[in-house]
Length: 77
Image (cartoon, rainbow, N blue to C red; front, side, top):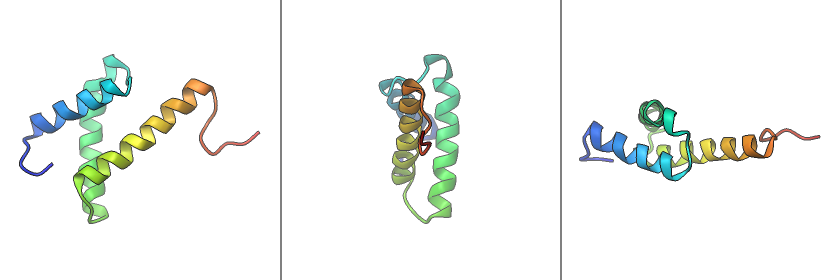
């Protein structure tokens, strides 16, 4: 998100998390953690911030879907 301020990045993440039905009471904290981890991941993997955010949101969505269904990703009966 080159050219965006930290406040703009966090607001975009908050909106995305709300759109994905993240718990509203946790959205602020989740956005901050997501931003921090995405920046770390982009640096570690020499990738873009946007790619890192996409990857992390995908993981979060899978976790939410698993908790809604009562299963754990990768766990077999």
